[in-house]
Length: 176
Image 1: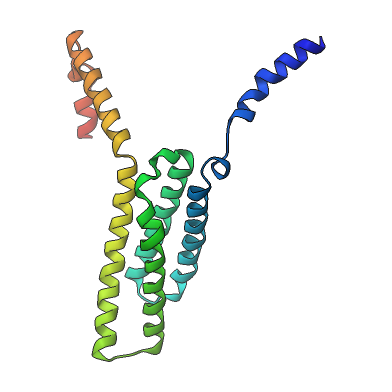
Image 2: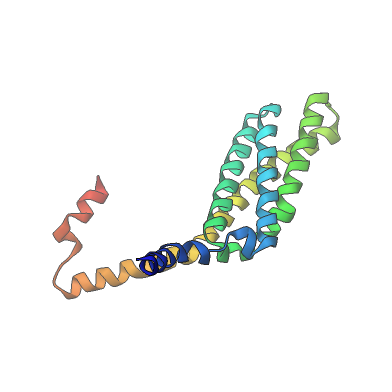
């Protein structure tokens, strides 16, 4: 009975023993994600400080996108190849730009240079928002290609077996 209990426990707990955490398996990536989480929290604290609704909306979207990128990388560390620049450079620079923007906004500087900076900063924050969204989409690009290929194969098989999308009212559902 003891031997059976030992064998059963080995089978049950072997998965737990075999799984390494991200911290154990890739300390550099773990540290990068931890830093990104801290900086993302900082973005969240900056949002209410900024008066511009456009910038607040962009920062909210960036915050949510960064959260999704972090979750995606934590769940599948193999997708981390292209995120270094975003977390090592873009995120910290974004925080610096937003802090500078907030300072100038609070000083109510109406000089030409101050206004030019604020316009450029608004444009850059908007562009960074789009860049982060593209980065998230790129993380799923291979998954989308695989899923699209599966859909094409399924469609071919249905047609080969004498079924058509009209048989399933798919087109009518899409029109609705």
